[in-house]
Length: 366
Image (cartoon, rainbow, N blue to C red; front, side, top):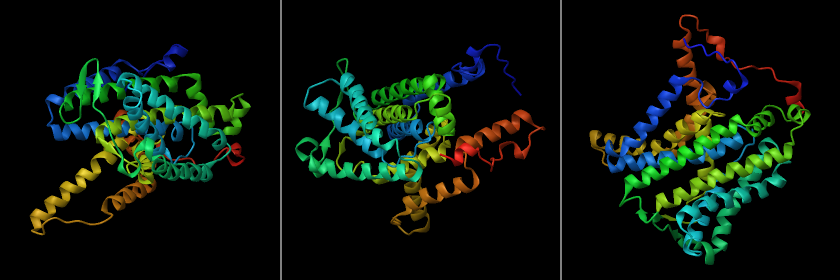
């Protein structure tokens, strides 16, 4: 069992709790950098897909997990980031090093503007409002055909960075390292955001808007800021998703993507950065696991290729229901319980993580 003694307020906001934690995360980064020499191109592509989903998950986690604002429309901001990145490169001739951050900025500004009327909504009404945005975005992409290509879609250009051309299939290692660098950069910014006064304001609004307002927090401004930062990170994920797919149209960023994003952070662990990564592993690798299992069963039983319509969506639904019923804290919550059990053994108590059934009176007055 490790006991951390904090002798100053600065220790409370350190990036790492203690030295061994920093060592293990550093070792994880080293392993991730070395993966192109350890995996085949197929599995490396799957890891890239996981990283992009994790980037999108971190964007949604800022809004839902740390500010408590439900959203079912983040597929729209994936589309904004994706189209903005390609249009800035093809129409204005900007290099990727400029178009990529600008795509995130444009997505963030759009999200902040949409948040101005949305900040008056709560709970299910906010979710329905963001759902409407996602549905409208698909129609807007078709209507703006001269700009977006409509149903015909658009092709993403190859990434050119400092004179070196990066493409998913011809240079998968370089594409992987670029994606990893972007994810690590956003991860560090996200972690520092949570340590800042703004990040603590997000948590205060999530826990109780009445209490947060009593402490002098501007609720509407905080929500709009969270929405803007969330959609900016989501826009960056959309830009990378476009380069990863190579081709996209109005059907690429549909309402199912928004639902999968929300499912991802709930299954991974709502309110934690780790949850975005654990959830991304499930969402990105589950379709491949289903396909491999289907082929294995088909060849073993001699039934050929087995195709069950709607199997993937059904499994996603069952996984979500299972976690809501048996592990509301998600995969990361289960890991915390396992780790705590071994740290405190034999003094671990089962009721240590029992959810409280009573709420503050201020919560009932929201």
